[in-house]
Length: 139
Image 1 (cartoon, one colour):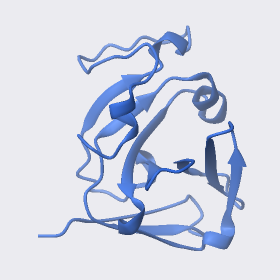
Image 2 (cartoon, one colour; image 1 turned 90 degrees about the vertical axis):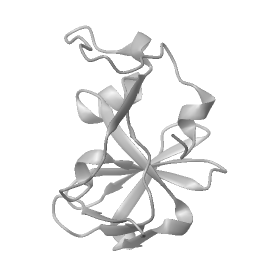
Image 3 (spheres, rainbow, N blue to C red; image 1 turned 45 degrees about the vertical axis):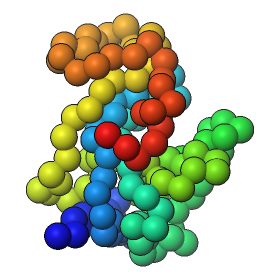
Image 4 (cartoon, rainbow, N blue to C red; image 1 turned 180 degrees about the vertical axis):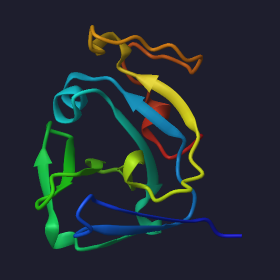
């Protein structure tokens, strides 16, 4: 049985379909994610072959580093995607996935950079920085 997930930005100018599995949610506490969202990113991921985007002309891509770029709706500003140069998957902001999402929490990364105004109180694995195995679409 094939999994199907759908999602969109706040205004609906960008929609997407994932025909396949999505990674567990990774919570990123790095400074860039904090600055863009005000807190942290909660992201899943899908293989690029499984991801279809409608309204792609409404996405603005921002190169946030030499190897990564962030995609957001140019109309409503919704953060939607993150792509790592050379990867065959796209990270998708978990909050943009239509409910019921079927997503499950996985881990926290860049905990050493988290904001000083909150605590991470769950029992999920916590990493000071990142881990190469967390940057793939495998569980």
